[in-house]
Image 1 (cartoon, rainbow, N blue to C red):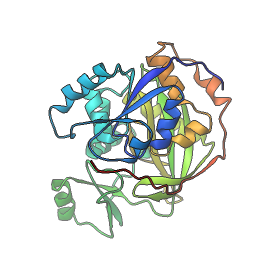
Image 2: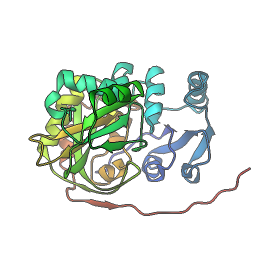
Image 3: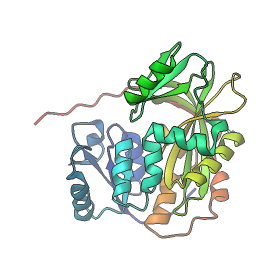
Length: 308
């Protein structure tokens, strides 16, 4: 797909290791990354020293940064970054109420049970179960319990955990999707999570799964998502329906596979928020370019820098 773009200034917030994603954006403009420490993204673009998520001055500092560098697009690449940019009312990020549901696994659980209980792995007093921190990310501090008593379940809740039904023997999927500024889905692209390390996909393959696309559209439009997002699912013979595990209101770690395979969410961002084009009916045009059964294999790459 050959499309002309306006050059634009892009600010990654929490870019960290998203070097390949930065390369995709640099084809359309200049990329900066807002970071609190040394990270690989510095090898690809200019790093702007940032504030910690817990520092209340981060809001004004980010505003000043956006103004100083004439930023056209802000791209959150960490769950905390979604929260902060939503509170700054950045139009290319999901609104605060939506971002809060995605950020807090307890709110997400309650929301899913209220709207789409069929697609959520609710703890139904069967064993085993999986315990997750409400505000966790990257599979940190997640563990499986063979059995949890009512008293133990209450203690987990007090300690800031949620409990889900453990779905065993299933295939995990991610669906990358784009929702326009009105919360309508423009397109979606499923891929398998073939190999995962530290909560991030290492090997992945695009698959044509209309059921997952349909669920993504229904859930995302009800939640009023905006911009690039990714939803994580698991399918198992033990469950009659796909289970929606969580939603990230941002680019996923493996979204570069989706970009490579033909769903150009960067183009959609630029069209909608830089060129101010109405993209409501553009989805079918993008579907023509989808490359199914495209496999991504990640590998380690070392980078070196000097501590000043």
